[in-house]
Length: 405
Ligand SMILES: Cc1cc2nc3c(=O)[nH]c(=O)nc-3n(C[C@H](O)[C@H](O)[C@H](O)COP(=O)(O)OP(=O)(O)OC[C@H]3O[C@@H](n4cnc5c(N)ncnc54)[C@H](O)[C@@H]3O)c2cc1C
Image: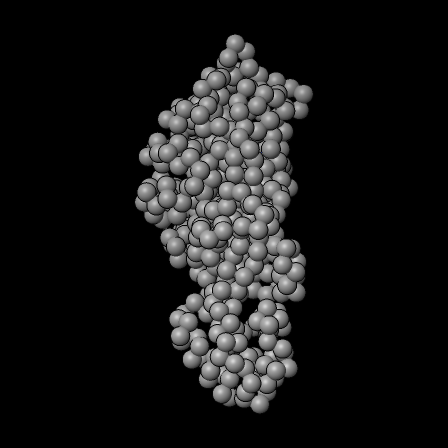
């Protein structure tokens, strides 16, 4: 018999284990992988964007789904608490563009190691087994089953994550366990995910990475998202930081409505760009169009944009009409890519959807259906944009559950 059983040694499970042990509870932490924090190790491209150094309001603004559910959890443990927590454990942090917080070492491993050291110091017992079932009697959660054995406890926390990047261990078990306790799991969808395009030229541009461009996402004529940054063309469509962020603004993709528009020269107004094009043209008057625009755009883009412009590649620059030049300038300011779908859930950074927040007490993270059963992290139906907000959700909900378990 132990005070608390935690299922899943990811961001939420490890934080909850540390906090519960600090509150004096005995903790059994179940993890089906041989190591803890497999997903944590790959966060932020191996650098771990551990939180966002900003106000609670800013966090709320970056959580499109169920932000109000998190109000108490953020009040209990916010981004300044996360930063203090890791710095006290010997991981110096730095704040970068967009208030994104990383370890000074740029190593996600340092975050995992700090959690592991603290769990060891506090005597958290880690059991490397997959939890296959909850033990529930008369509406009370009494423990779990794992490896053919029963483990009893006063409370159980489900911190199994979502179902994206399933190779890291978060493959949907948390949702199955929640459903076995009578909980509703809302529709699971990929979020922060690459996007599929029917435009064949994306494949021609495969591998082309664009920096300092502005990506605007539209549903019909409605602007859903616009931001400057980096993106990438792939064999199926588009990816990269701007695209992942844009994807979380799409609720559903209706045929022929969703599109992105890329401003390849956001620093130039249309007039400034036209002046620049005229200068380049003046230097290349007797050359073919396709050869006269080399200074303006990345080489891989030139054949594609030439085709889209309707200007013959071999047309002499000196014969380009004002209308053709205007159309070419428009393409540079609004390079079009139609969007027809999301890449699958297992390629998504996060899972949108999860255990319904209507069935979890936001003050305690306890199930409203089964007493002694708690939830933390991505298994819950909350998700955020990029910037460290998703890990902060995991840490805040974990701390809150640990307070009450
Ligand atoms: C590539 C990538 C990069 C990311 N980068 C960032 C970032 O920089 N910043 C950010 O804020 N967010 C980032 N995220 C999102 C963030 O990693 C997740 O939101 C966060 O890890 C969720 O924490 P969690 O504890 O709920 O789940 P997880 O971290 O997924 O942990 C769940 C754990 O539960 C274990 N488990 C599952 N089922 C069972 C079972 N039945 N029995 C025992 N154990 C079980 C799993 O093995 C896993 O270890 C990234 C995600 C990905 C995929």
